[in-house]
Image 1 (spheres, rainbow, N blue to C red):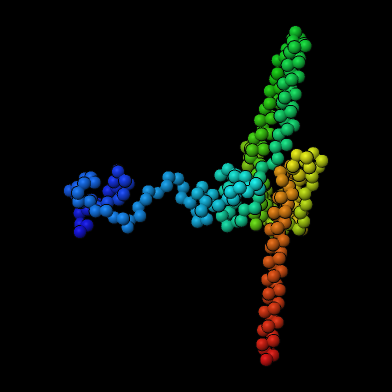
Image 2: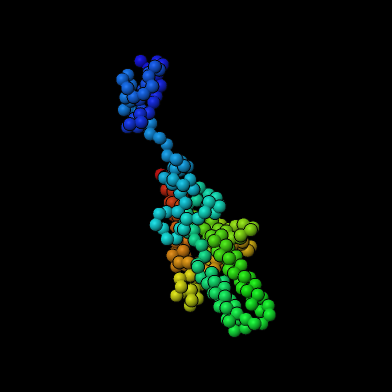
Length: 252
């Protein structure tokens, strides 16, 4: 029946049909195949098993305020087997001082031009000084844009650097104490410093300053830490119960 035939997709309704070798269209002699599910594949990367359509391993959750969508150059540091907890940039307050310095420098340059514009080379020199402040502000913005704090169920990471990218890491199992500090401006503006302590040698990541939403970040990481401790305690108690039951059965 299907000897010398081929599949062709109709331009009218998009359905796939078996067309004879001597036929070239949707006329008579075509055979409708309703049982074939040959929808075109979506353009782009195939979704992962967990339903993530961007091929990033399911990074983050929709609507989670503690997970900002990081760029691909940052997502590559997170393993597909890790549970994502936190991914945040530093608070925008890190840009306040460079921006204010740039604005104040521009205002000072304009004041000098109006008040002492007749002084030779003074406007030019002050304008060059303002360009230095502007370049510093742009550099600080690039640093803020590339700094990411990431917490998973296995480790804590801090990516930083503009020209030279660096990644500081601390395994979550080595964290023995964690706290955060909030200054008076931080309490009003919503940022704080997260401090991690570990037993033994110094770690590459010990503190993250000017982190937004420190209360929520602290609670989420503590939930992961205490959850692991509770699970370990439960396994130890379960092993003890099994040993007691085995001994009781042997006595019988």
